[in-house]
Image 1 (cartoon, one colour):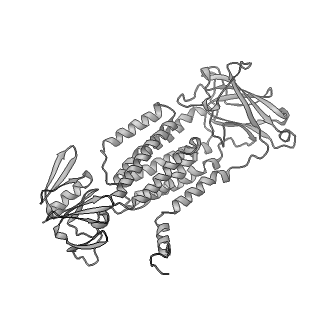
Image 2 (spheres, helix red, strand yellow):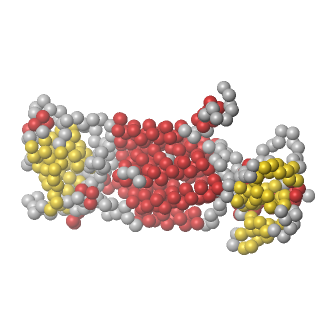
Amino acid sequence: MSNAPGNGLQIPTLKRLLSSWVVAPYIIATLLLALPSLLRPVDGENTGELISVALSKQSTGPWQSIDLNRLQLPDNHGWMRAVFTLPVSSTTSESTPLGLYLSGTFSARVLWNGEEVGQKGVPGLSPNDESPGPVDTILHLPANTLSPGNNVALIELSSHFRQHSLNTILHGSETLPGLRLASYSAETRRPISYYAAPLLIFALLLVAVFVIASTSVHQQTLALILATALAVASAAEIFRAFYAYPYSWHMLRLGLLACALMVFACILPFYTARRADIVLPTILLPAVMISGITATLLAGPPQDIVHAALWLTVPVSVALTISSIRSGISDSRMLLCALGCLMFSLVLDKDLFFDQYLYVAVIPLLAVLCRPRVAPEVHPVMKNDSIPERLIVNSAGRKKVLDISAILSIQGAGNYAEIKLADGESVLDDRPLKQLLTLLPKSFARAHRSYLVNLEEVKELRSLGAGKYELLLSDGQRCPLSRTHVGEVRERLSQTP
């Protein structure tokens, strides 16, 4: 097949895209996004609709309408009156048995149409009277207690061991509400299909942690922390599908999950900054992490705090990555696409964000974390070990030959590079610094994300205090020297004859 331009995408190019994980992560993410709905069992027609719900301090009323998304119990005890409507087909002796699904940080005793049908723990007026029930429970509704039309569930509730930072004691989402009727099941735990995304991602994350730890990927330590934090969060998420723990344990699980994701949120900008050759003060990292974890545990609903933190750190990471692309770090485009996927997930259904969407959205980022990257300052070995004496400059469609010995420094200028010569002349080249560095001899080094310098023309390395440095060149020019490169430049200057 011809490789001439204008023939469209060629097979070699397609192979490179697939082999470098440019396309595959997004295909996997799309499949995982649809997986929970494909695996979720269908309840069928044997379900009832919740038409009204009210709360009272007494079992006899008076009743006050409530929002289940903001359900709190005065004095941690109360009575709920929930009215469900059932079709005739659900109340016959041949109908599939019905169950009342209760999920949340409360204990409960249920009377269905006046008959007691079961308990979720033991509710009580005081902590001493209450035995915390499991976080998820399914109560069987006998056929003789069901009637066509409206059915009343009178539920005694207590939540003395609840977490006060949560908005509601009732858990669930639109697809899996914490108070609902459905076909009865003896399995009280959350369905594993609901956690299909974090479960599969957990397996990928374990592989990723091994890959990052055993290979030389860019910024290995930060990448390892990011992957480990996600693995801890996904493990805490899927734990609910394996064990119906007492609701008093819920904050331990939720706190672990939220703290792991807060670590992920705090580390992400530092990782993207390092990839962009931007050095953020190292002392900021532990301070940011401690502040984030403290806010997660004390300031409010943990998931709300983490969601807000991601809304702050993901855009910052996007801005840093765009800066690195402008500086000529071309493989940052893959990171930018991954961050864009994560950014998009933040605007989706918030209830499902921590259960599904987040873990789907991090798949492209995971591919970036595991992908080795050659740092810009590393020179490839020339096949003939020769030292180039001239550089052909591409500028406005014209070619110009420069003596490399006459080049003092090269400064990134948007999509161009400004080459500064010993005679004071400046020449523009339409290639990024990263590409030019591969064409220059080893006497050239990256001093800053926007500067290359000829080390043979450096007269002095100056410390300006507060972690800032600069290089003084033979013509009096001053070039900034970032802390990322100061160690390497100092070492190579000591080796320069």
